[in-house]
Length: 233
Length: 279
Image (cartoon, rainbow over all chains, first blue to last red; front, side, top):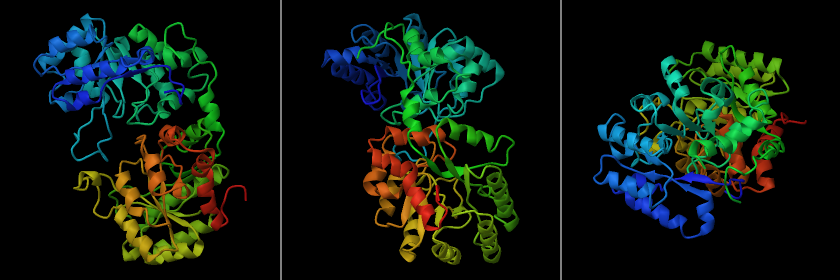
């Protein structure tokens, strides 16, 4: 972070994907951050919650209170449930009622060269729409937009109205200038998907915007302002 | 360094200044049979300070690879380079299954000032059909860029790949048979198993790798640096411009290594045939 001028990072414990009990990963993240005051100032933790695993409501409560998690990320493909699973929708509604965001990662790794032990399916942007349609007043973070961003006109309109933050790390953030026009300048912000992806590409997509695509104030919002507002920091 | 709503936004765009510091040759670039090409590619290149793009138009995957197909692809390149000679270096494509036509096409393309060779997935690089082509390129002191298939990391090769797509092992066979030839293993970030590829070609100094592709995994360049070395790596985008530039900048490289990747290594290859930038 220091090498690349990153003031703060929103992060989860990747072990939350692999542990059967995701709360162990959330506790690990909390413990790690609390080893030093300097981490607390710069690391913004999100919990991983698996809504088809027993005790998840208690996990959510502990994570968002005692552990101070600022949002929740879910990994349905790894945890083997679908976005329309009733418990998933219930989780999103509970997180909404807490005023916190739900993070949806379109893919963790490129499935082409990934390990044979990894999952093979990735999401397109349209794949998350059923959840947005089910809980349209939730706050959504859409991360690592690697798959197609092709949407129906109605879906675009819904996303424009949604409290939404899309990060710039994904490979299909190809023409950010056009995407700002389509979805709104307040919907995007810097992201890296680090340490899996490199630390510069997400920033470069913002830096390379021309003045007629994003003025200095918009770039500042993309770098930090939008996520500050979105998370209420 | 804290983080709060009171913090002042960064006003100066230092990252873009850093990007523009380096001269760049995109060693793996394409233009398309579309109305927006090559303007779209030039627009990305302008944003990121990419001075030269080595362009080709491979035949469509699954096509028959007939002479009329590769001739049409090369005509596109000839036309684009003639319009923007300062920005593009043209690279022909051929199908060695048509030996006479392929050789004639190479000559035609060289007469139009093209350089190197781009191959796709119609015939494996290790196939004897390529022997006369490789020998021709040894004589011309030019590099051969070959596409690499994807999905080997899952042990069973990706079902979408055609039978004759090249794998890193095909580079090994060709490099062993022709140590004086120069091969460019395509797009480490292109969806192939880049770890496997780097390990396979490590012992062959005549095999270079380009780091282009949409998969900008943070470990690709450090791994290639360790296994292939800083003198055998080329910057490239393969139409994924931000990833191409971004992961070079993100890697823990020295100034000298950045310059080698972005510009010098590929320019040195071009120099062998007298086609280098600033000649």
